[in-house]
Image (cartoon, rainbow, N blue to C red; front, side):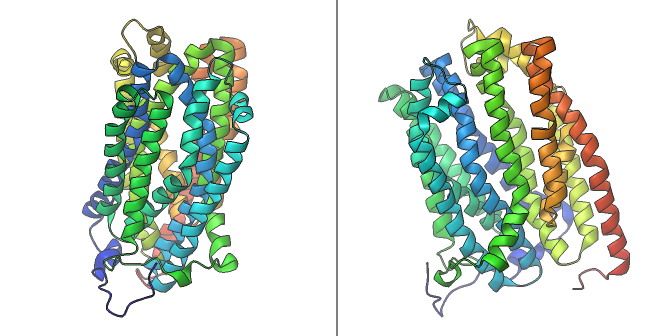
Amino acid sequence: MDVEPDNRSPAPPDAADRMGTDRIGPLLVRYSVPAIVGMLVNALYNVVDRMFIGYGVGAQGLAAVTISFPLMMAIVSFSILVGVGANTLFSIRMGEGRRDEAERILGNAFGLLFFIPLAASLVGLAWLDPLLRLMGAGDDLLPYARDYARVVLYGVALSTTGHGLSHFIRSDGRPKISMAAMLIGAGANALLDPLFIFTFGWGMKGAAWATVIAQGLSFAWCFAYFLLPGAGTRLRRRCLRLEFRQIVGPLLAIGFAPFAMNLANSLLNLILNRRLQTYGGDAAIATMGILAAYMSVIFMPIFGLGQGVQPLMGYNYGARRHARVRHLFWTSAGTATAIMVLGGAVSQLFPVPILRLFVAADSELIPVGTQALRIFTLAFPIIGFPIMGGQFFQAIGKPVPATLIALSRQILLFIPFLLVFPLFWGLPGIYAAAPASDVLTTLIALPLVLRQLRELRRRERETPEGSA
């Protein structure tokens, strides 16, 4: 962290300001495509790990990674609480032209992004076996899950900090540099996985170490960016002191919605694993691990699109360019819907080739996975709208509706369906909980988003564009 040298070379002055002036289409492409590529590359962590584990360790290895997943998600939730809230404030302050306050937000977020997940990982390591048993690991799966989870917990603080900093790089007007961080990590992971699993024979530990080292490289890339003179905003010592009232409190309030969604997703996966164990055993859990990896490839472009459009909406909302905010939302929502329609069609038409990426043709997981994949993805064509609706509310600093949309799908609907549907339909009922919650979440999000868009239209008439 620098001491503010006088001879620094700032980034081009319009790197962030162009968010409020460039044409919407090219602007969205410039910001979202690197984010989408970055998130797709990030999805390869799960896909590559599961592919090599499926062929190198077997179904028990796949089930063990699936069992460990809720614990990792719970810890990552705390970095999301900080990262999304801080990034929203950062984008809005940049739109308002308050760059000094944006640097203070960056400094506060850096410390929180590292130390909160670090503390959570230490708790996880101290209570690892009881937590894994709580998540559904029996005597057969526990050694595999322990080997994987323990190593990943060692490096989770670096991983979460690097991921959070990559969002700040994008909001600083450098989406390609942010994308490069993802590419570095995923490339390293793809190279190290076969080396550690097959050549060294490390099994589950090898897959975990490959992930930790790869994510450590991504962190180093992002950290270095904010120390170099070319960054538009810098990571400074004076900005590391926490300002609870002005920065920490507001960013935690804004970040609560995605935090709640991710934490709820962790709880959801815990319940899902236990229900799968009850109605389908280890094979059903392993199958869900494959589905999770495949569906991450479908959903990550949506999340990347959201990450790309969020600083644009936040900047233009801060600059009072409400027409641009509405245009950005509708463009991104339409794109998300198109992606989900395509993903749903592929899932319905080609389930067996998808499963064969992870297991042999004679695996017992093929028939179970075919049924699961087709039921789980039935409502894909409509879920893009509420996902982008949540991103919209986060971008403009509206945590309450963003939280409602997030919790509707994960807590208020999906979990009750998981508990009730299997009582009537067994294992297929577990899979049917996903499309049922997707449909009702869309019906909840629709009026909330449309009402906020009408409010922005009203402000357009009352406030000249771009005036403070």
